[in-house]
Image (cartoon, rainbow, N blue to C red; front, side):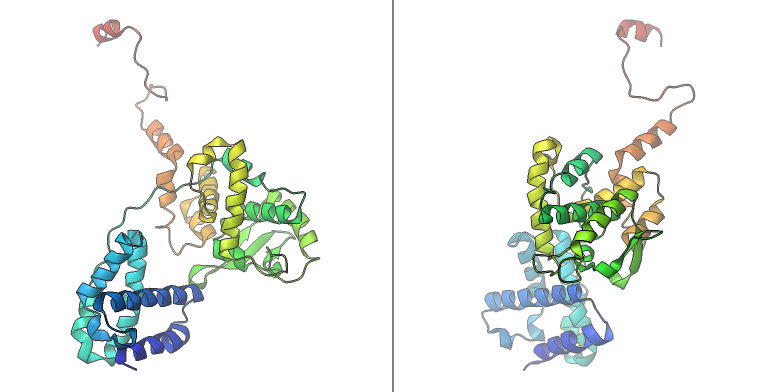
Length: 329
């Protein structure tokens, strides 16, 4: 076993779990990055995987792998930067133990992330959200479960991983009804439930408790639904909703879109950005600021407030008689 293989085993079996206590999602992402990198180097360098060592991790080879992700796999700049972070994490840990490879490792650690264009946040309007919530067939158990799931997602803004991890013990239906979860960075938070969501969840949980398992939104045998299952169910109901609300046809809607919808609903209701950041489980308000850019209503209100005194708000309409208007100047 060479130095690189030893460093990889040390990182993933000891350092990542014991010292850093990284989440399972982060560890899986880092693992997949290194699997793809080693396979790429095996093909491009024409050497067996078990012979790839630190001397193969040159700036040229790593840059070639990152370009391969974008050009051949179709990954965007954000995904590229995430893969670069995974490579850096392992090499940073290996650097003190392998000073003989310091020059190669340091050069890779100096690779800058690629600048990425931040896309405009996509969210559902009230009419679109209502059409989606009405799509599940509530004459069936699966439809009632999906309806409750969508209501919870649109109102609370929980991430898809947080929805999958919810158990029956995480919801509190008494005074101050709320749902608790552990999100990114192991930040625990409680999200209040509206009267509509509370009523929906009470009806759903009364039926859910007759089934096995502890997952709040479960499959046929009581097991928790996977991320793929949630996206599949959402896609099914979107097909139904698009027949009632044509504007949905032009939108790419995922479970994360429902999270954006919850945030935009709070913003349009006048809730402060700092409170929305706490609601969504953001570490700071920088991530939440993106919703300000997406809300044209707020921008229009800002324009209206900057009009000169005595000028009525509204869009400009030219005078019908342009000559008379010019003479009046």
